[in-house]
Amino acid sequence: MCKRSVNYIFKKIDEEKLRAGTRAGTQCHLLKTKSLENFHCDDDFMWRHTDFLMQQSIEQSGFKYGKVNSVYHVHNETERIPYASDKTKAYRIIVIEEPKYIILDKRKAEKKDLDNARAIIKYLDPDFHLVKKYPGFDFVIRKLDRDWIKTTNPKWIKRYDKTKSLMSSIKFLIYRYIITKNRRIRDYAIKKYGG
Image (cartoon, rainbow, N blue to C red; front, side):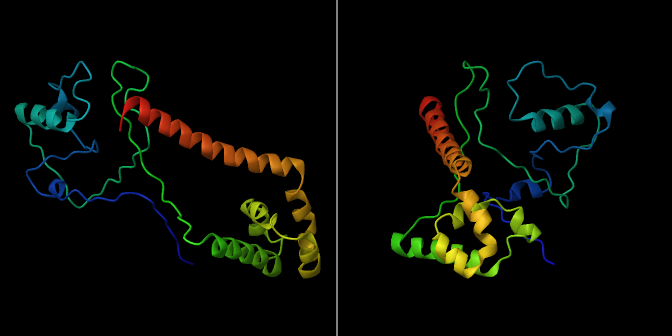
C-alpha cells in the first residue's frame, strides 16, 4: 500500500537558512534556559525578527549559538489577517489561493461527470464500507436517471432516492453556499485590508 499526499502549497526551501552563519528564521529552537536570562522584549514590535534578537541575546550572554541544518521544519501558513482583533494594527491579509479546475470545454466536462457517475453505479457496491462513508458520491449520482440506475445496479436505488430528498438537496445547497460565502468573506477582507 502506498501513502499519497496531495499538497497544494507553495513550497519553498530557504537556502540561506541552510548555510552556517545565517539566521535560523523559524521558532524551532533547542536552548538552555540560562542562555536566555538576558532576553528581553516587552512589546510586539519584534514579532517578525525574534530569531535575530534571540541569537543576539544568547551570544551577548557568552553562549554559543548554532544551527543544525539536517532538521526540517514544515511551516504551514493559513489565510489570516495578522492582528485581526486590533483594527489599529491590522494592515494586510495573507491569502493562499486555492488550486482551480478551469473548464476548457463545458460539454466534455459534463459528459465526463456523467461517465464518472455511471461508473460509480455500474462498478461499485453501495454497501462496501468505503463507498458507504463517502458522501461525495451522493452529489454525483443525483445527476443520473433513476430508471437507468434501476436497470444497471438496483442496489443503488435506495441511496439515489435519498439524494433526491429534501434533506439531501438542502445539504447540497448549504455546501455550495458555504463555499460561496467563504470566497465572499475572503474578497471582502482583501478589499478592506489590502493584499
